[in-house]
Image (cartoon, rainbow, N blue to C red; front, side, top):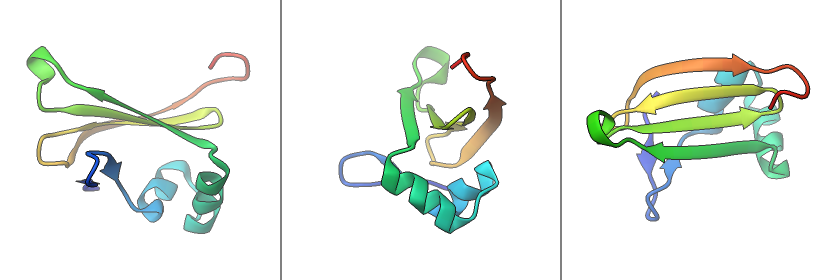
Length: 87
């Protein structure tokens, strides 16, 4: 998976790529996006992680987290699930 940045510096990725991380169809992912159900957080790396970014995408009780290198390629990723009441 490779990301690009828009004119404002935000990461951009196709719904199809994100959908696969959550086990959804692209159409289902687009519906979640339209409803605002997908929450994203980007953290800039500092110190030894300078040049990298950590992108976290949360949908319900599922989170996909990726470390994105300076070339906008995913260098590490993980999936997390939390039980109700532990978000």
